Image (cartoon, rainbow, N blue to C red):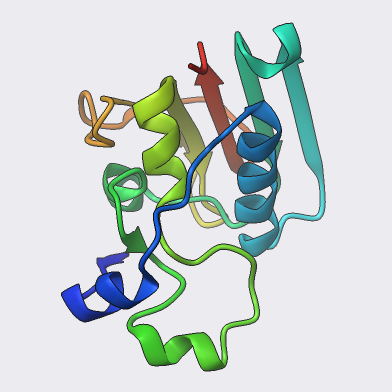
Length: 150
């Protein structure tokens, strides 16, 4: 993962906003599909206001990727503005997870395909990690938990 350059950030312009639980679920589903997921599990409590969980069987993230995954404008999908001409995925700007952190409590548990163990990490409102990723048990893929949205 890498931070987008200033010019790309400027040209991308408007901030992606999570306006309701539906938009948060949409963004998480798109992230899962971009990660190659073929199976998705969604759990909602109180129509997504209390809890949104999206679990997938995609590529997963390693602990170093997890540390920057929720920082604004960090992405693994493009390197600069010109990459948009050939980009075939859904989201790319590195804003959705950062927006979710600002609006609720986010934690990510992920296990990449080549890892023997999963890691869990929780994030502050600015998208920075609260601690180092902690080893845990989970199938390969990623689980994003968003609690107390708004």
